Length: 428
Ligand SMILES: Cc1cc2nc3c(=O)[nH]c(=O)nc-3n(C[C@H](O)[C@H](O)[C@H](O)COP(=O)(O)OP(=O)(O)OC[C@H]3O[C@@H](n4cnc5c(N)ncnc54)[C@H](O)[C@@H]3O)c2cc1C
Image (tube, rainbow, N blue to C red; front, side, top):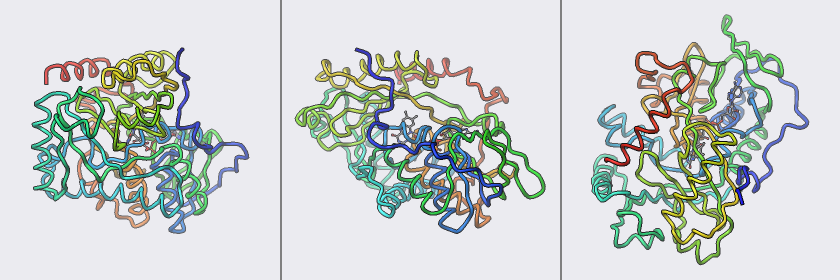
């Protein structure tokens, strides 16, 4: 039987709905575009500081990647610390890495302060090597992290990996105990409640179509009317569109898909991941997986394009095949759910914060947004209020667009990039 095309996480919580919609305010201090981790965390920080803030969301609050993701709350960024060090120098690399650690603390703090029941725990992440040479790379990377960043991780050679993962597929692993996990839909719903409680107003089905800059104000036109705002923050991630065409041209939207199995026995769940780690592999076309209440949540970039009926069906089959390759013991286990979402990649694979034509933004999380979007939503909001955005570490390097300007927001090159990644996985 085909799995249900439904976001499993949504069955575990009442998501914010749009019935009883309140009218849009005429005028606010800050209009936040996008109701995910970035927008809600920003709205919470702004409202706590006494700003009048409205969150404008095209769909329902939490509809985007924030309620669809793997719930991995990870240290670091998409690029390795060595690469970031080479590119930006040791001082900035240290600051950026420290932000990624602060980001996990920010999640922990808001979960605790706002009593968000989302299963947040620091159970650590496990990065597994698909090839022997990749394990050598993990050893070097661990030495580098400790030497340059004072951050300790542990290595697990292949012959000991059964303590961590119930498979023989990999060639050893790296553990980072600082990382954690949560249920993303429960978390984003909790953030929404917290932002509202602090005084922000949340407006579902208010797609922003146009933002007009006049004098020192912005006219934000939505499908539910117009709001005048002193400042605007864009938190639209992989769904960034025509309302902010310059940002749209800097972000590549990439589909990522997840399946959830039926509930497994305690014994089997324990065999798969005895320490309940957040697990991901070393491939370009990577798989990421973890347990939640005895279901295996198994994701990957099974199709590069955003979800529709066709990509969901093919992704379910591809992910189930990949899952059985990792865990042959799951060959007769039922896959109950499949869903997808859209990731946001900048052309340099870095996360970017800043101001463009007077609009503030935070995006380009490249699969690291659970912690980073929470943190950067908050710190970008604070920098907006303090007029100090240029001091933000994530605003201190350039935000490149496509080479030769060969991109208008429609990612025509993704099939080629997908092929290229598969080739790299094969030869590297
Ligand atoms: C399948 C999947 C798995 C992932 N797994 C992980 C993981 O395990 N760990 C991790 O750290 N990260 C993961 N990520 C990434 C993470 O989910 C995102 O980085 C994060 O949720 C981004 O939050 P956001 O608030 O910026 O964007 P989103 O949550 O995507 O919210 C953006 C919102 O903007 C709205 N919007 C767009 N345009 C407009 C407009 N014109 N007007 C009004 N609203 C608009 C959209 O409707 C959307 O709701 C994953 C992503 C996906 C898709």
